[in-house]
Image (cartoon, rainbow, N blue to C red; front, side, top):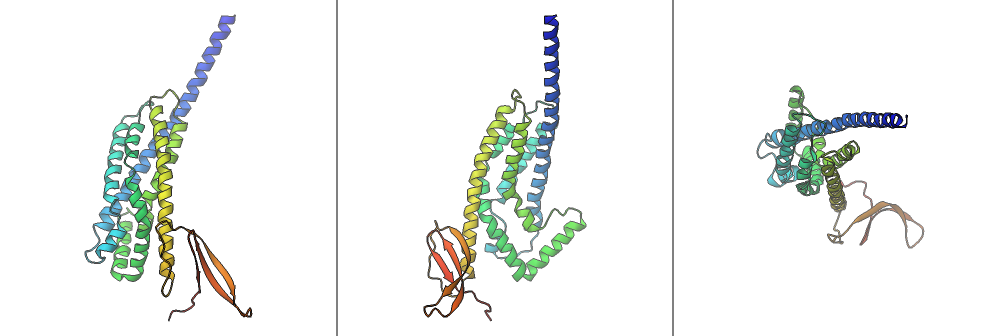
Length: 282
């Protein structure tokens, strides 16, 4: 009787574990194919930036500096690295089985993600350059408008140019979220579990580093925009270590204490800038 009870208990535990494993496998497969699907879309976006917007731009519409600012020099390398990653993923997943391993190729990709640093630093220059060229260059504006129209007519419109060039900035955090989900549904004795854990650890470190680079780029862009907004000679020279902290309005009380004047203040870690707002430059 005792032996029979133990046997039935073991059988129940085995069935329970099997049901849990089958459920985990379904979720794991969904995550893996989401990684594949989003990578295909991502590489398509990168290719459209290069093949449609960059290569089809008529010569001499933009000068060499504008071209460099608009299309990051690291774009070609990113396309090459991620296209290779996509090919390896597709090869791995061409024949699905519950024990397929994908995070060995993920770890190979992560080792090369430092190339994104230069892209992130250049990103804010790209956005600023695009906006200025749209406003000030009628030939460029016409090219962009016509390109959007052609892409829509061919039913291959993915998004407007600013939405396309931000995708590499968003891709690293996306990898982290996907790997967290993959780790959640990869059981402990799965052959890919050590690779998943290593990939998640590495991508977390990369994401932290990318966030720091992004904050630095945002800070540099903010300080540049402040400098450009100042009318007249600016006496302050900002060091490379300068960080923008805050800005806001205040009222300045004159020595006579009979008049209040509106001022705008910019606060940095090494200085503050008190400015007079201007209403009309004409």
